Image (cartoon, rainbow, N blue to C red; front, side, top):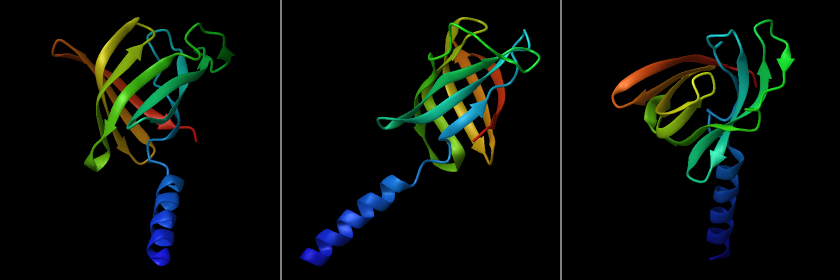
Length: 129
């Protein structure tokens, strides 16, 4: 009985040590003004969320933004084959929230948002770390 309890405890601890592949810091594509950001994606409950942790101007210099600290992605549920769906994505340059999905391929994250069946390609984000 002790062996089973130890094995179960080790399995739980090992599972917690492995992060989901989408977790990390991602650089967004440039917006209409040439600005971009770094989004930190991590687990939030059973899904994944992302917060803007840095903003950059069109020259790549860090800038102040009222959106730093704002949740940009939330409620993204992991599905097979790198799909994250059923969540929301906020677009600071348009000040709109979309029904979103993301597709992870290696160090690239394709992001898309839709409202009333009209979808906007959020571009491909690249992994920073």
